[in-house]
Image (tube, rainbow over all chains, first blue to last red):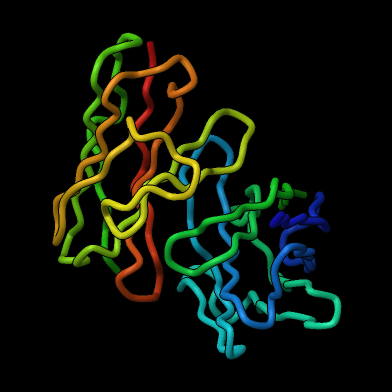
Length: 115
Length: 107
Protein backbone atom coordinates (compact mmCIF):
# COMPACT_ATOMS: atom_id res chain seq x y z
CA UNK A 1 0.00 0.00 0.00
CA UNK A 2 1.33 3.42 -0.96
CA UNK A 3 1.61 5.91 1.90
CA UNK A 4 3.07 9.38 2.24
CA UNK A 5 3.51 11.03 5.62
CA UNK A 6 4.43 14.70 5.91
CA UNK A 7 6.07 16.14 9.01
CA UNK A 8 7.85 19.32 10.01
CA UNK A 9 5.13 21.95 9.89
CA UNK A 10 4.60 24.55 12.57
CA UNK A 11 4.60 28.23 13.42
CA UNK A 12 7.49 30.24 12.03
CA UNK A 13 8.23 33.95 11.91
CA UNK A 14 8.43 35.82 8.61
CA UNK A 15 11.90 35.51 7.14
CA UNK A 16 12.50 32.20 8.87
CA UNK A 17 13.24 28.75 7.51
CA UNK A 18 11.58 25.36 7.81
CA UNK A 19 12.19 21.93 6.34
CA UNK A 20 9.30 19.59 5.65
CA UNK A 21 9.73 15.86 5.22
CA UNK A 22 7.65 13.41 3.24
CA UNK A 23 8.28 9.78 4.18
CA UNK A 24 7.14 7.40 1.47
CA UNK A 25 6.28 3.70 1.66
CA UNK A 26 4.95 1.27 -0.88
CA UNK A 27 6.99 2.78 -3.69
CA UNK A 28 10.48 4.05 -4.28
CA UNK A 29 11.07 7.81 -4.48
CA UNK A 30 14.20 7.17 -6.52
CA UNK A 31 12.21 6.18 -9.60
CA UNK A 32 9.06 8.23 -9.16
CA UNK A 33 8.10 11.86 -9.49
CA UNK A 34 7.02 13.55 -6.24
CA UNK A 35 5.28 16.91 -6.02
CA UNK A 36 4.70 19.32 -3.16
CA UNK A 37 1.29 20.99 -3.31
CA UNK A 38 0.06 23.62 -0.89
CA UNK A 39 -3.35 24.90 0.11
CA UNK A 40 -3.77 28.19 1.92
CA UNK A 41 -6.59 28.24 4.50
CA UNK A 42 -9.93 28.18 2.73
CA UNK A 43 -8.27 28.43 -0.67
CA UNK A 44 -7.44 26.25 -3.64
CA UNK A 45 -4.46 24.07 -4.54
CA UNK A 46 -1.06 25.22 -5.80
CA UNK A 47 1.80 23.02 -7.08
CA UNK A 48 5.00 24.49 -5.69
CA UNK A 49 7.77 22.02 -6.52
CA UNK A 50 8.41 18.70 -8.19
CA UNK A 51 11.38 16.33 -8.30
CA UNK A 52 11.51 13.87 -11.15
CA UNK A 53 12.88 10.34 -11.28
CA UNK A 54 16.20 11.63 -12.58
CA UNK A 55 16.53 14.09 -9.74
CA UNK A 56 15.74 17.20 -11.74
CA UNK A 57 13.72 19.81 -9.90
CA UNK A 58 11.13 22.38 -10.96
CA UNK A 59 9.52 25.21 -9.02
CA UNK A 60 6.58 27.56 -9.21
CA UNK A 61 7.61 31.18 -9.71
CA UNK A 62 6.13 32.04 -6.30
CA UNK A 63 8.77 29.96 -4.48
CA UNK A 64 11.68 29.87 -6.92
CA UNK A 65 14.92 30.86 -5.21
CA UNK A 66 13.43 30.35 -1.73
CA UNK A 67 12.34 26.67 -1.71
CA UNK A 68 14.45 23.63 -2.51
CA UNK A 69 13.09 20.13 -3.07
CA UNK A 70 15.41 17.16 -2.54
CA UNK A 71 15.31 13.48 -1.74
CA UNK A 72 17.14 10.86 0.30
CA UNK A 73 16.86 7.56 -1.54
CA UNK A 74 17.99 5.24 1.31
CA UNK A 75 15.45 6.88 3.62
CA UNK A 76 12.83 6.93 0.84
CA UNK A 77 12.04 10.49 1.85
CA UNK A 78 11.43 13.76 0.02
CA UNK A 79 12.18 17.11 1.58
CA UNK A 80 11.31 20.69 0.90
CA UNK A 81 13.55 23.32 2.42
CA UNK A 82 11.70 26.61 2.74
CA UNK A 83 13.70 29.79 3.31
CA UNK A 84 12.78 33.48 3.60
CA UNK A 85 9.22 32.50 4.48
CA UNK A 86 6.42 35.00 3.98
CA UNK A 87 2.92 35.29 5.39
CA UNK A 88 1.55 34.18 2.02
CA UNK A 89 3.38 30.85 2.39
CA UNK A 90 0.95 29.92 5.17
CA UNK A 91 -0.75 26.74 4.01
CA UNK A 92 -1.19 23.03 4.43
CA UNK A 93 1.63 21.39 2.50
CA UNK A 94 0.96 18.04 0.86
CA UNK A 95 3.36 15.73 -0.87
CA UNK A 96 1.95 13.61 -3.67
CA UNK A 97 3.23 10.84 -5.90
CA UNK A 98 3.43 11.88 -9.52
CA UNK A 99 3.97 15.14 -11.31
CA UNK A 100 0.99 15.54 -13.58
CA UNK A 101 -1.92 13.54 -12.29
CA UNK A 102 -1.26 13.03 -8.57
CA UNK A 103 -2.39 9.55 -7.59
CA UNK A 104 -1.39 9.33 -3.93
CA UNK A 105 -1.38 12.13 -1.37
CA UNK A 106 -0.22 12.50 2.19
CA UNK A 107 -2.39 13.95 4.94
CA UNK A 108 -0.59 17.30 4.86
CA UNK A 109 1.29 19.41 7.39
CA UNK A 110 0.35 22.96 8.34
CA UNK A 111 2.86 25.77 8.03
CA UNK A 112 1.91 29.07 9.62
CA UNK A 113 4.09 32.10 8.95
CA UNK A 114 3.30 34.80 11.47
CA UNK A 115 4.96 37.04 14.01
CA UNK B 1 1.13 30.35 -17.05
CA UNK B 2 -2.02 28.50 -18.08
CA UNK B 3 -5.07 29.68 -16.16
CA UNK B 4 -7.75 27.13 -15.34
CA UNK B 5 -11.26 28.47 -14.78
CA UNK B 6 -13.98 26.31 -13.26
CA UNK B 7 -17.70 26.90 -13.34
CA UNK B 8 -19.91 27.18 -11.51
CA UNK B 9 -18.21 28.11 -8.24
CA UNK B 10 -21.02 26.41 -6.32
CA UNK B 11 -23.58 23.92 -7.57
CA UNK B 12 -26.64 23.28 -5.44
CA UNK B 13 -28.06 19.93 -6.37
CA UNK B 14 -29.95 16.98 -4.90
CA UNK B 15 -28.90 13.37 -4.41
CA UNK B 16 -29.78 11.26 -7.43
CA UNK B 17 -29.44 14.16 -9.85
CA UNK B 18 -26.80 14.52 -12.55
CA UNK B 19 -24.02 17.04 -11.94
CA UNK B 20 -22.02 18.68 -14.72
CA UNK B 21 -18.89 20.62 -13.80
CA UNK B 22 -16.90 22.66 -16.29
CA UNK B 23 -13.24 23.55 -16.57
CA UNK B 24 -11.72 25.86 -19.17
CA UNK B 25 -8.02 26.34 -19.90
CA UNK B 26 -6.62 29.65 -21.13
CA UNK B 27 -4.76 27.75 -23.85
CA UNK B 28 -4.79 24.21 -25.12
CA UNK B 29 -3.63 21.54 -22.68
CA UNK B 30 -4.43 18.68 -25.05
CA UNK B 31 -5.75 15.87 -22.84
CA UNK B 32 -3.36 16.60 -19.99
CA UNK B 33 -6.15 17.25 -17.51
CA UNK B 34 -6.98 15.72 -14.16
CA UNK B 35 -9.94 16.03 -11.78
CA UNK B 36 -9.75 15.73 -8.00
CA UNK B 37 -12.28 15.51 -5.21
CA UNK B 38 -11.62 17.04 -1.81
CA UNK B 39 -13.79 16.64 1.25
CA UNK B 40 -13.45 18.90 4.33
CA UNK B 41 -10.37 18.07 6.36
CA UNK B 42 -9.14 15.53 3.81
CA UNK B 43 -6.48 15.41 1.15
CA UNK B 44 -7.53 15.61 -2.49
CA UNK B 45 -8.31 12.34 -4.28
CA UNK B 46 -7.57 11.74 -7.94
CA UNK B 47 -10.73 10.93 -9.89
CA UNK B 48 -9.86 11.35 -13.58
CA UNK B 49 -6.62 11.70 -15.55
CA UNK B 50 -5.94 12.08 -19.23
CA UNK B 51 -9.22 14.04 -19.31
CA UNK B 52 -11.35 10.88 -19.40
CA UNK B 53 -9.66 7.92 -17.67
CA UNK B 54 -10.97 7.01 -14.24
CA UNK B 55 -8.35 6.41 -11.58
CA UNK B 56 -8.26 3.05 -9.82
CA UNK B 57 -11.26 2.47 -7.60
CA UNK B 58 -13.28 5.43 -8.84
CA UNK B 59 -16.95 4.56 -9.40
CA UNK B 60 -18.33 4.51 -12.93
CA UNK B 61 -20.76 7.34 -12.15
CA UNK B 62 -17.79 9.72 -12.51
CA UNK B 63 -16.85 10.51 -16.09
CA UNK B 64 -14.64 13.07 -17.75
CA UNK B 65 -14.64 14.46 -21.25
CA UNK B 66 -13.10 17.16 -23.39
CA UNK B 67 -9.77 18.13 -24.87
CA UNK B 68 -7.93 21.29 -25.77
CA UNK B 69 -9.46 24.02 -23.66
CA UNK B 70 -12.89 22.74 -22.63
CA UNK B 71 -13.45 19.92 -20.16
CA UNK B 72 -16.35 18.45 -18.24
CA UNK B 73 -16.69 16.25 -15.19
CA UNK B 74 -20.05 14.50 -14.98
CA UNK B 75 -21.41 12.67 -11.97
CA UNK B 76 -24.32 10.67 -13.33
CA UNK B 77 -26.34 10.15 -10.14
CA UNK B 78 -25.14 11.98 -7.07
CA UNK B 79 -24.62 10.03 -3.90
CA UNK B 80 -24.43 11.67 -0.47
CA UNK B 81 -20.68 11.02 -0.33
CA UNK B 82 -20.11 13.01 -3.53
CA UNK B 83 -20.81 16.37 -1.94
CA UNK B 84 -17.34 17.93 -1.89
CA UNK B 85 -15.12 20.39 -3.73
CA UNK B 86 -13.85 19.38 -7.16
CA UNK B 87 -10.71 20.72 -8.79
CA UNK B 88 -9.39 20.42 -12.31
CA UNK B 89 -5.64 20.58 -12.98
CA UNK B 90 -3.66 20.74 -16.18
CA UNK B 91 -0.28 19.06 -16.55
CA UNK B 92 0.57 20.19 -20.03
CA UNK B 93 3.82 21.94 -19.20
CA UNK B 94 5.68 23.25 -16.16
CA UNK B 95 5.89 25.71 -14.61
CA UNK B 96 3.52 25.17 -13.07
CA UNK B 97 0.74 22.60 -13.28
CA UNK B 98 -2.09 24.88 -12.25
CA UNK B 99 -5.40 24.01 -10.64
CA UNK B 100 -8.75 25.62 -11.13
CA UNK B 101 -10.31 27.45 -8.20
CA UNK B 102 -12.71 24.61 -7.49
CA UNK B 103 -16.42 23.85 -7.72
CA UNK B 104 -18.30 23.12 -4.51
CA UNK B 105 -21.16 20.64 -4.75
CA UNK B 106 -23.73 21.26 -2.07
CA UNK B 107 -27.18 19.97 -1.28
